[in-house]
Image (cartoon, rainbow, N blue to C red; front, top):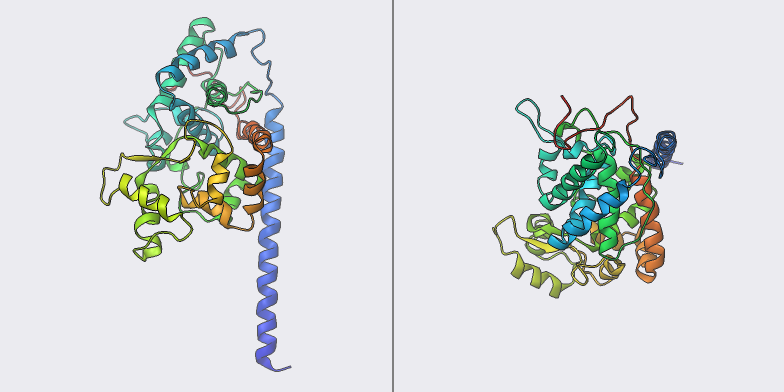
Length: 345
C-alpha cells in the first residue's frame, strides 16, 4: 500500500475518532445535566405552597384571564420570557430584573430586547396580586412558570402540573446570555448541541420548537431568507415561493425594524400542531424552523408531530416540565423578590 493511501486511511480514522469523541462528550454532558436537574427537582413540589399560600395558582390564573382579555399576545410572549429565563442561569426570574446604573441585566442584552412588554406586565401584575394575599412567600420564578402554563392553555395548549419552590436569583448579568439561547442563524446540529447541554433530547427540542405555533418574529430575523439567501440576492429555495412573496410585501427592504410577521402563518392565534404541518409545506418563517423539516436528524419528529397533535401536546408538556427544572435555586441560593424587577435591599 503506497504512502498516499496510508495517509488517507489515517486521516479517515482520525475523523471517525473525532466524531465519536464529540458524540460521547455530548451524551456525557447531557447525562450530567440531567443528573443535576434531578437533584435540583428534589425540593420542587406541586404542593410547595399548600400551607403558606394555598390559592397561589388560583390567584395567578385570575390575573392571567384578565390579562389575556386585554392582550392575547401575552400568551406567546410570557412563554418566550419563561424560556429565555430558564435557558440562562436557570429558572430564577433573572430575566425579569431591570438594569441599574452599575449593571446591565439579561433583559437588556440584544436578543432579549424584543421580549414583549405584555409578558412582563402579566407577571408583574400576578406578583402584586400574590403579594397582597401572601406577602414575601411566592417567588417571581414560580409565578412566571404558572403564568406561562395558564396562558398557553388559554390559546388551546396542553396542561401540565407546575412544580414550585424555585427561589429568585440574586444576580442578572447580560454577559451570561451569549451562547445560552438559540439564534435564527443556528444549524440543526448547533441547536441540538445547545439543547443537549441543557439536558434536552432531540425530541424535546423539536417539541419545544412547537411553541412557534403562536407569536411573531421581527423582519430582521428572516429578511435574508426573502431577499438575500446566502448572499445570492435570491429567496431561500426551501421556502414556499408564494409565502416568500407575501413576506416581501409585509417586510420591504430597509423597513421599520419593529414590523413583525406571525411565526405560524396558518393558525397564529391557536396553540396546535399546524406549525409542523406548515414546515412540511415550506411555510416555516425562521430558517431554524424550516431546517427542522429539512434536516434528516429532526424530520421524522416533525412528521410525527404534524400527524398527531396528541403526541405533540404530550411531548411539549413533558419538555416544559423539564424546562422548568433547569438551574432552579434553593433557599440557600436565592430568595423571594418583593418586586420582580428589582433585587431586595
